[in-house]
Length: 230
Image (cartoon, rainbow, N blue to C red):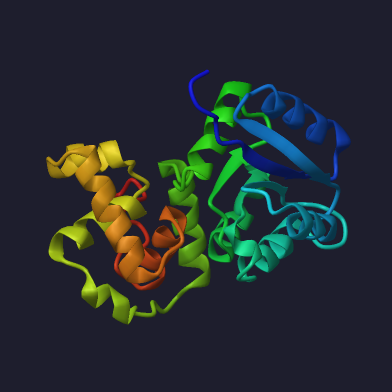
């Protein structure tokens, strides 16, 4: 192998030992991924993140004591720990947690029955600084937004965006990838990525996940716009 691969360090937090063991076995099989710690509840996850400083935390939602959402909020609210990116492990029955997890700073979501290859790819995507926000997840975010945020709060920072950046942000909020944004606006994926990076800098957003929340909370995109109604 030419050069030395950068190893992505991972902590898995889930109260089911079999789930932790299964995910760990899949991820440790990859040369560039390493599971450095496991936790059975949110408080233990917080301790492990403090101790091990992982790049990625796979975080279950429902755990005894401190749950995964509380742990995510604690991690992303800490200036030292927040460099660790959190991926929420969820099921089809836990949609109501998605909005709160995004607001807490989660970088994406994975279903627990995900295919091994998709799990590996997802971890690499988030470790590279992107977010796992699919159109289906975006629709759930909109539904939660409509239920919880009745009065949009305009964000002054949005005034700093150019017309093209506003267009890009709306497409990010609809769950489009850089390739899809490029096709929609007739620009290259690289140009789309540059626009997204500049938008994140201007809005002080950690990743695309936070851009989605900002777009809906500010009223820039209204519930229903990207919900298959337009």
